[in-house]
Length: 346
Image 1 (cartoon, rainbow, N blue to C red):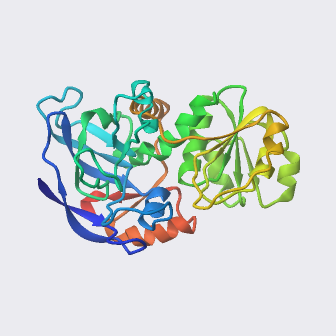
Image 2: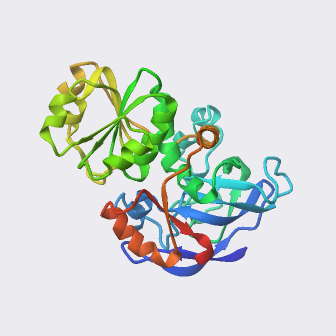
């Protein structure tokens, strides 16, 4: 075991504080990663504050991890010391079920092992990226292409793949009209990726405050959902709507914006249940769906796609001492567009 520095929430809703944690020895197929940057995802806040249910404490959040391999186990074939790598939202799965065999480890029927706030196969709690080092099986580690800066790549391991996977699955591309609800950490990546895939992209945001940014990142149109005229004007417009917000929406109103056979896909996860009038989907054969992250192979595909198109996330680099302040700012939508911790400051 190796003792490493980390930032942890000692209890639900408690401020995060500097501490030390134990990392397992490097096993046969493991890589030891010196973490350089860790993104702050809204999921970190939900879990550290038990917004999604009972959690495991102390908790070291962080599932947007970018770093350098410093040691590999004797059976490792994919990576060598010095490689630039990333770790996303999961660090293991059963590897045997139908979904795992299809490269859909995120939907492992026995449940994947989360990068933090989970119990690993060794029976020990997992700790995430707000730490200086992590030991991960090579099968759940991805390569960060040379064209991506590590700090801008870190958020791609959740925000990037969470938007890329449904955009690919629902065939966003040339000739398709795609709307992105919310212009935050997830939403801004949804805009960039949908644009790079060739779709006509519209942002639906509460206000026009971030309109200039949205257009700069690749949106063709930008509307305020606080304006009732928006829903009249855009009725029946979209093939695909990707909702990235974690606030409950009036689903019936948003579903009215879909074309026949359109899909409304949720990647933001509100803490509260939402209600729906089923006529909103029956009329127009519409789909209301959800999407998690992506599998390991698709996550690598997404990183390569972003590198090929020359973009990472839009980030604000912070020191570890600013994590608690950053959490409050995320809740107030006061970040353009993803906080990334400089792990050297832990």
